[in-house]
Picture: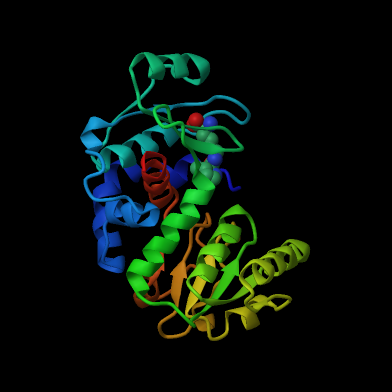
Length: 274
Ligand code: 2YC
């Protein structure tokens, strides 16, 4: 799991509105619509304004990330929820959240970023929700994906979950991870669970050939060149930093979904409420 740095998230509170309108332009859906469809949230199940969400800073391990609670809080507020950051971090913050009658608490240490629903006792992990939300964004952008070819870059928690969701959509796929045993394990697992062919053991350039979808869930920088892409390849990239080379054209950016927190936070919150 890549640890975010302040520069990754500093602008989120001031740009969340612009981010959402760009997301709608690219995918046809807003951040809220992507989160709702990702988790199958029935319309009108709840009114976000009635849900109190407490974001608790956590100082454990490598400590707080400057701007992290503020970024999470801004995304949750943007979705219409009643949300606040606790004055204190850690256990004191947890008691503050509880005393404020918060229904959901959101908090992250260096291992897990979780949304905990104190009412229905659901606990949702950001990594799993990020995969679910990014696949929902892909579906909104591309429509029917059956028979298309996808490459998963990064066989970790997010890439592994995305492979399952893509297999459910009957997408043919290849897996690439510099850790070849991790790559092979994921390929074997998907082949076994879904009885579909999954390519592995390729070099990255060959793996990207003829792919309609590149799902980049890796922390690698500049590994995807514009010359590796087809005219309509979609880049679905939860990985931080973005794996595209610096100077790609506007038309590639218009087919790229990437953000440091927004889709994962929106999806994990909805997922703990349905
Ligand atoms: O400010 C705080 O409360 C820190 N304890 C937050 C630490 C988050 C560490 N995790 C990450 O940087 C990201 C997650 C957002 C998802 C994967 N890595």
